[in-house]
Amino acid sequence: MYLFYTNEYRRGRKHSRELLAKSITMLNEQLANAESTADSSSPEDNSEICLSKELYCMSQEELLIYIEKNIEENQNGKPCIAGVPDYSISHSENTWAIAFADVPCGLDIQYNRAVKLMRIAERFYAEEELLYVKRLNARKEDEFFRIWARHEAVIKAAGGTVFDEVSSTLNDEVVYCGCIWRLYDVDFGCRGNEPVPKAAVAVRGDSALRNVNDVNLIRL
Picture 1: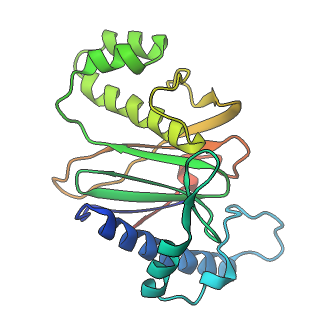
Picture 2: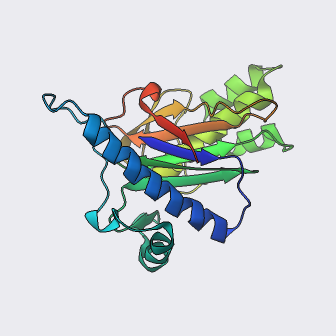
């Protein structure tokens, strides 16, 4: 998995599309570099992620035009682009991020903010999650948003909605929409006094991704 992010998101569709085009360009560079340094004697491909050859030589301006013409929704309502591996975008506050994976994936980012935690938890969380949050004191807010990010990641991976029932995401494997999904918390490693978001990725169980340390985290 490749995960690109920035803490300088200006918000809005235009900037999001620009960051999407930049991420595809950087993904191409990362894949080319990985291919050139790969051990040809090893049959394993850790990423199994590939871009259409049509996109290899496009400038970011050309990619923007291509994206506008080719972005659509798949049968589950997830955005997809011909020739681009499965991806998931999330943004919160000034942070924007995108994950590319070899199988359907979901990404979600959540910053702590003032909401009615327990009212939301009682409506959307599985019983195990609700009891877990209720027992907490000092870390209640942090854990609430960590769980919420994991919920959203699974739902986005499958193309579901927030109103769907999801089994407890306190576990690292979740069954949802007839598939097994693996969950990983992601540390964006923010600098200095930057607030740290809660972030999670979900991948279908047959993904080559087996450890969060295998996520290639790259700042745009």
